[in-house]
Image: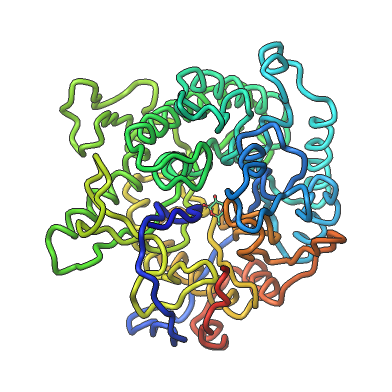
Length: 501
Ligand code: FCB
């Protein structure tokens, strides 16, 4: 069994190693438009997360994880050779401008603003931390770049999540986190509501529980504790509701003049979930279950208020609710992170409750792969967008990107995904923006600095940033709002990845 990193996709459990062939791209097929267009206003940006690009967050669960031998590939540490983004604010804003982007997604770090529980309880924020984020907002406004702020992106303060105490509930498992997160969101929205209209509450609220309690690659590092993962997921859903309400109460300033002071949504990881063997009904049923639990369960809750307490897909259990008043309507938009496909099967170790075995990388098929062993699967993106459309809300693509150290495949990857996004838009999806993951090469959680997702490289000694060539391909789309089949065909076919081992 492997217990490697699982950020963008889902559970990483045992997988057969397979070789990857150099593949030619899937033909786009007939009946597909020559070009797709994105009219203004549209958020064209890239994304980051505090722990992945900032320095100096030792007082978090991830800080503790980095200090625990054997948890991070090569012993990498964002404090040693990381992007140090708060020391490079002007540089990074200049990169966004040079790359033709008009939006930037980043997180504000709870443990930086409130380093101790006493500081949180007394509402005594750290002055230097406030000043750093003030500076970032000022630089973004001066450059006319729209901020999209994530309230929580994986790292939690040590006073809420301590992997050395994993016998007791940690992080999202702890009942008090629900109201504390609401308080956190309200304070952030009060301070920066005049700078921000777009808010993401929790980044990938099910990935952290899955990686933390089932595959063990995130803190607190447990294996197969599905029951605890689901408690964490439920608390995250409820915490999102509190956060939504708190932002609505605290952010009363409409910056972009659209008549809304805030647009608030969850940021959800939604892979294309497929049966390993589509001809085998039990695998098809397993894929339906995994798709329901991973992709739909939380959206059903925070959009429609459906509370399926036992995750069985029916609202008839003793703790289920058809319309939970604390959750219904708590979404102005849905944030979609899309990277790849996962396979579900009944062959192999079935996870309790979920009753399926899930593979998220090294899938034995002919699709091209990324440096991270994930499938490159733009068609899956449109499938997932079709699922999102059923909620009838605007959508923002909060993450989509590729680990590609050679920058050989990134331009094609971005164009093919934007083409599918444009098709979904033409078919009626209300999509408001696209954030490439990521602006910079950064600390990719348990995989350290190995996978290179950045539009820009970062010199690990000097911190100097350098644009990769694909940045300009993305910039052209941001400028013209247009992706054509010709643009895609002009790119070389996918080349074999440089596997990140
Ligand atoms: C997502 C995470 C992001 C990054 C990408 C590759 O799951 O939100 O922080 O790790 O995957």
